[in-house]
Amino acid sequence: MSCFSFLKVMMVLFNLAIALGGAALLGIGIWVSVDSNSFINLFGPLSSNVLQFVNVGYLLIAIGAVLFFLGFLGCCGAQKESKCLLITFFSIVLIIFIIEVAAAVVALVYTSVAETILEGTVTKVLKNDYGQNKDVTAVWNKTMSELKCCGLMNYTDFNDSYYLSQHREYPPFCCEGNTTCTMQLAERDNITGCFPKLLSEIRSNAGVVGGVAAGICVLEIAAMTVAMYLYCRLDEK
Image 1 (cartoon, rainbow, N blue to C red):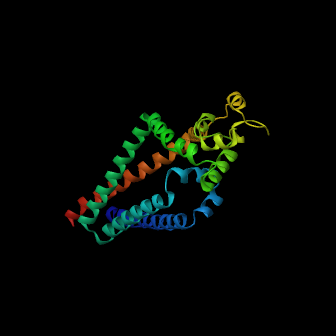
Image 2 (image 1 turned 120 degrees about the vertical axis):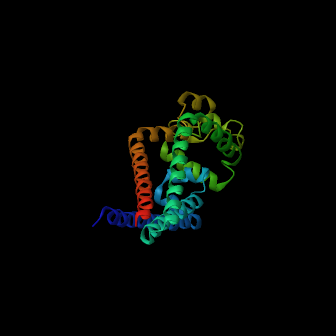
Image 3 (image 1 turned 60 degrees about the vertical axis):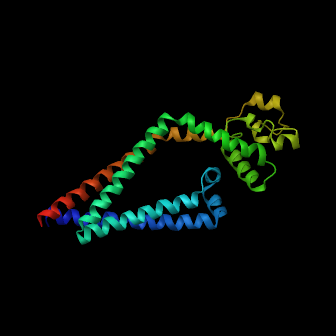
């Protein structure tokens, strides 16, 4: 088997796996959109917290559709030896690679900006809806209980909130022990907010996250290299 034939077969198999993975994500995204409660029960408090910031169902559907289309494009391009499909596949992967690198740089440089945006949006939800909206209250209660955290950043997120005005105390998660959580106790205990807790968890697993990201980048570079190799060799056939 020639080098061209070997790479062609590998290109087909690799992109077939991508297409199947995209189809799986599509299915999961539809499931989450239709039955989010099952998703929360299966994956726990972290998933419930994520669902407040991002519509996970639509996100997975979008990612699954892109992966399915990309895998189908690469698979057909290699199988049919189509220069048009191969260069389209190469261009899309290159664009995705550039976006990923840019997103990584932005995430490293502008973490404080993301924190400010979250404070402006999520804190408003806590002040207005916690204790009043059953769904929001249930999600945050489960999150704060499982992660041992208080609010988004700390107990001050509940200052001037609906919950505080109705109960004359802070949520029990903001104080240690089974006692009435007054401002003095909440300030004394100073329970960490859920956002810093999540950041801490992510940073503690930074090696794993970085390894996965590096692996994805290597696969993308390899896919672009093979696609361009097949594209150039087609001129010689």
